[in-house]
Amino acid sequence: EVQLVESGGGLVQPGGSLRLSCAASGFTFSSYDMHWVRQATGKGLEWVSAIASGGDTYYTGSVKGRFTISRENAKNSLYLQMNSLRAGDTAVYYCARGGEIGFDPWGQGTLVTVSS
Amino acid sequence: QSVLTQPPSASGTPGQRVTISCSGSSSNIGSNYVYWYQQLPGTAPKVLMYRNDQRPSGVPARFSGSKSGTSASLAISGLRSEDEADYYCAAWDDSLSGWVFGGGTKLTVL
Image (tube, rainbow over all chains, first blue to last red; front, side, top):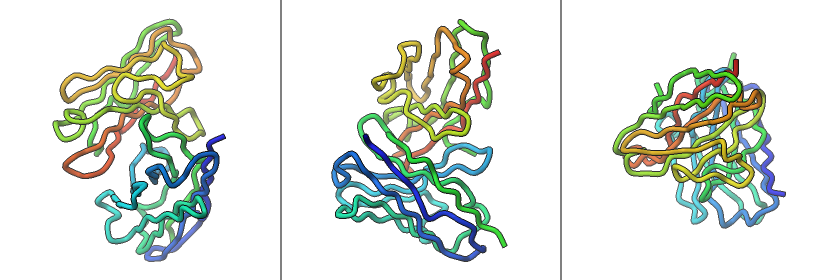
C-alpha cells in the first residue's frame, strides 16, 4: 500500500524554524516528484514546494528564501525546512506524491502553528 | 486571491447534475492539464480527475471533466449525499513555475 506519513509539526514563535518530514512507503520513492501543499484552517489548498526525482526544486513565491525542500532517497523521506516563520504560514502541511494522475496520494497532514 | 477562479459554493438535490467551473489564463489552464481534487470533511484531498478528463481507477463514472481554452469544468451527475465535499481545480502555471489551485467550491447536497 502506498503511504505517506508527515511529522514534525507544532507550535513555533514568529521568526522561528521548524523541519517537517514525510515518510514514504509502498513505492519506489526515488522515481517520483514530491510536493508539499498547505491548508490554513477553513481555507483552500496552496501548493508550497516540489522536488523532482532528479533533484530540481520549486517554491511558491511567498516561501522562496525561507523554506527549503529536500529528499533523502535512501531513507524514503521528504523534508521541508521552514525558517523565518510567519503567522501566515500557520496551516496543515500535506506531503503528496506527484505523477501522471496528479497529487496522489496525500498524507494525513501535520499542523504548523506560528504564534507567540 | 487564488490564481484559478472557482465559485465558492454549489448545490443540488440527490439525482441532479451539478457543474463546477474553474477559470484560469493562458499560462496555466490554457497551456497545461487540469486536475480536480475532492476533499471530504476532515480528510486529506484525493484526486478526482487528471489530465482534464481522465478518471483514476475507483472514481465513479458519474464524475466527468472537460476543458476549453482557459476554463475547465467538473460535472457530477446522479448527485449523491456522499458527494458533499470541497472540490478544487489545479494546474501547472508556466509563468509562476509552480502549481496553482482554485479557491475551492463547497458542494452541498440538499
